[in-house]
Length: 234
Image (tube, rainbow, N blue to C red; front, side):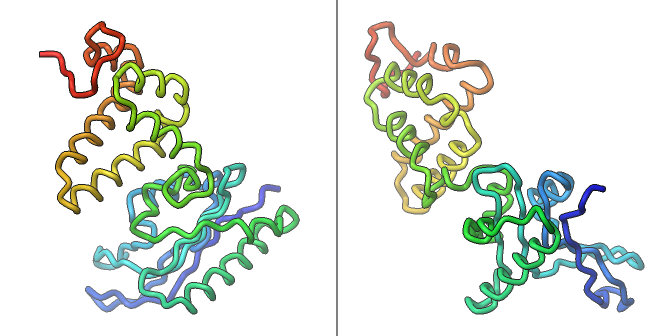
């Protein structure tokens, strides 16, 4: 018999709109393989929202969350309550790991408790179904190395060679996240030239995914074999 790993709670609630009591279903443990619908709710940032069955008012609840991703390089994500203090964060993590252990039963592996990736709630929607170890601060430097080759070379031919050599990394959703975050950070710091450079490189990678590598670079090279990145058709 299949084991249900995802775990909901039903906190007694009084609607802020009509005052009627109800008990919404709010998951604190999500098995991403078992419940892709809940993963989508995480991506939509509505997992811990509930609609009052009496008047339709939507309420948001501050609850911790553990996402279990069997088979992934980072199998457990922990997203604490944004307003929780450090002691509460640690306590909630221990409680949710204990709950996951009970839910998994004989499938539990103690190594899961030692390999928990903590992600703040505002970052969770974009990383819930990617490998966070490839992102800034992660333990796997392979994307960072590939991105350095792609960004810091002097010609578009070298950039194309970097993409072809590291296609799986540079055309991944993780690479998209790295560049989007870089654009946001440089924009906040008023570095307009860096924003333009990162935006251009992000557009190249998107074109590579949509049209293929050869087509994406066709309009960026001048036939010399060493086209400076500042060169543009037209």
